[in-house]
Length: 304
Image (cartoon, rainbow, N blue to C red; front, side, top):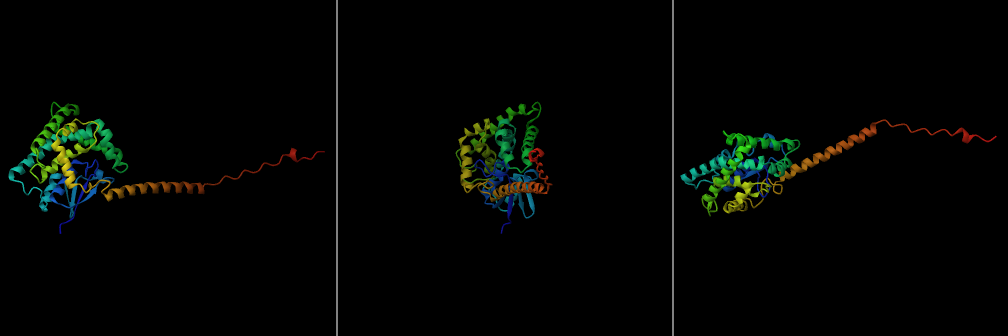
């Protein structure tokens, strides 16, 4: 009997099993390889701050990072790449490197640095799914990490600011999407009729861009023009996640229970506060009743 495996990841929305790129990669590959995972969304828990997402837990072992998690699954005989040739394996590695170098910086900018998208979509989403008081500063922390990563990888001389690198990263991202569209062609998946690890990575990277309601995104508009990539995302969702998105509010009882627990705690706090106020009122000394005024001597005097 296979050892139970638990995956900690961000929950889902927008019709996706997760809104988080790396989490989507692992979830998709697990579906492709037939690996049974117990999904533990980090929404509404302190793991949003202290945990590494995604992380796979199995028999006391914790594995992080999509590439390492996929390798761990392969060692457990959950291999979606077993039919690939050596050349296709090399192509897979090359395209994954292309996604990480060319597309990822633009995605980070789109969701975390673009002011309009961050204020109207990204920040409210992550704040609404983080426990108090993390909801006040976790989104800004993630945004700062995204900005630092962009500048670290793309801010070489003479491009030192985010304004300088913005045009470059979007140009490279559009070129990357064009290459992916050309490589996919009219095929259902990148290496034929069966999805493999490259399909999981491509899905994880472009599905949020395809499904999110972004107020401002030139990259999303470019993706919409590449119909085969959009159809690819929809096919993966329909074929492998049609039974409900793990981690989404409608499919995850853990998320529902967490919300109910939070509501119960708020109600208990209010009840305790009311009881305390009532006890204070009962224990406070009462003011003496005012004495009645003595009758007026003029009224009680009898006429002579």
